[in-house]
Length: 386
Image (cartoon, rainbow, N blue to C red; front, side):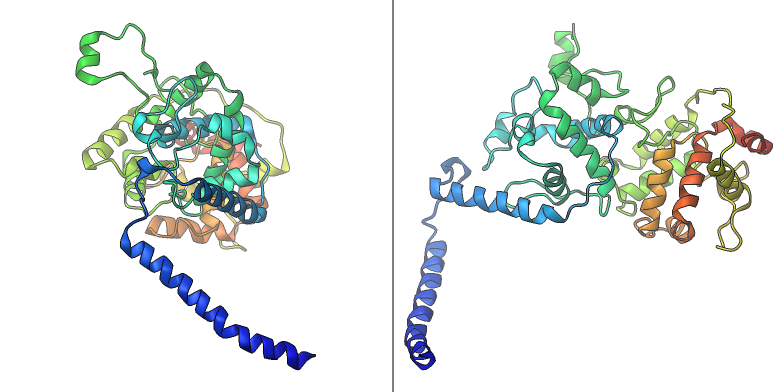
């Protein structure tokens, strides 16, 4: 019996190989001949559209199964996702209340209306598509390498988008920007010379603080009052792909030295809102954070945080006082993964961050979040925060 099967297999094998070779040859002939019309204006044949759609959907479903969804604060993350969507995604996918640009509507496939299509996918699947992009569609992968934490902000926005009215979108997408997308009573002369005002792609105020407003979310750093040297360094690192962020790299990549210098001047000169220190009840976490900030941990070879980030710090080091607990904790996680080690400054902090225990990282973040910028003028101020 087995010999009979082997005999039939040997007889069929040459035919199978011949058919395979013939099929490959036929495909090559068709490709080389150019008879298959690849013009976007021609559209896809129904069978090809079905095949591509099936392949895309199955690929997303299968590959997204390994995505581990973290605990998300959708209320805090969503405004950040909306601001980035306006700058990086809305051009193709359009915004609530607006029609898609005719140029992008002629892409093949046409970018989907995410207000309609986002609910068709799970949270894991949305993350996977934003993080990795999709071939043959023009959908790019996330530009910030290993910055999955940023991608979840887009996921939070996409989950909220289906129920979002145009007015709500404008509020979230504009952030702290004073120039609304839909400026009323706009003079015709201004329109003729400058076009209709929109939220600019690189409008920093969409996310960051102003002289009278905090950042739009705790996951965005407070820039007002930072030293000019540090702000310039950070922007140059983003510009040169030495510091990873899918939010900041596309913006910084468009800046020249003059822009970077002007922005650093502006944020360094911002008036930082000063509030009284809030006396919180003593807690083990805050006490641990204070000890770490003032004295470090000799056993783990961790220097005191304030030795570099305190009153006598170098001008190209950041101030941590007043940054949110979420932001500091997030940046420590990025450092611990080694994503900031491309620069001398980043390499130093990467080594230190990797020595921190998870509990120490949370304690340090909690401690600095309850400080205010002017505390650095009084090194003893931290003593009262027990």
